[in-house]
Length: 193
Ligand code: IMP
Image (cartoon, rainbow, N blue to C red; front, side):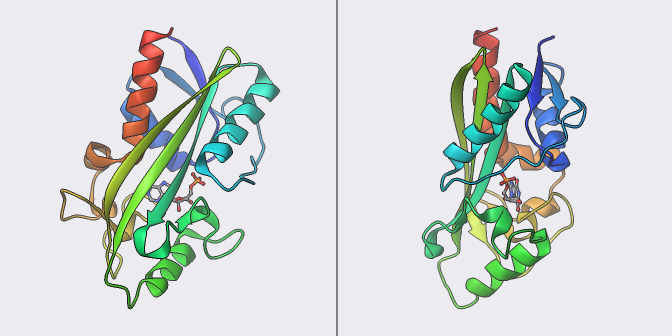
């Protein structure tokens, strides 16, 4: 089975991706590959940050790898927090701080439409390929549920009544941005091994 490094330090993302991949591909995390770095996300787009992460790891290891960058894009906030989703409430903000800031900014706003967008960057034999996944939905006024991570407790995907945080991972993966991008990655990999 082909081994692929997943350039992330976020264990929640690793768990979700492993669930989608099953035993199709063998994912090696940065930790498992013995790489201890905090990869910077200095750019203004998810695309550029995803490239930054995968190319950093490819340069370091010379091995095929992929990364992903995800943002929550809120319509009434002109796409914010978007690429700054992890740092919305400040440089090393906790998930909770980011959620509270978003709830505050949407307090008197009627339009709660939002979408998660994931961009995966794969570097295979030195060549980059990108895959996008979008999940449309809305933000609610109060947190609900304890599963998942990040903005999951305040996001309801279109077609459900539950927040992502009220779903088991299998159910989140029926809707998820990350799953949709992963599906494109898997289709590409299965045609290009
Ligand atoms: P990044 O891709 O690590 O930069 O993620 C940005 C931020 O978006 C994370 O810190 C989370 O707060 C949020 N995020 C990313 N993916 C998800 C998700 O699937 N559910 C909820 N929040 C997410």
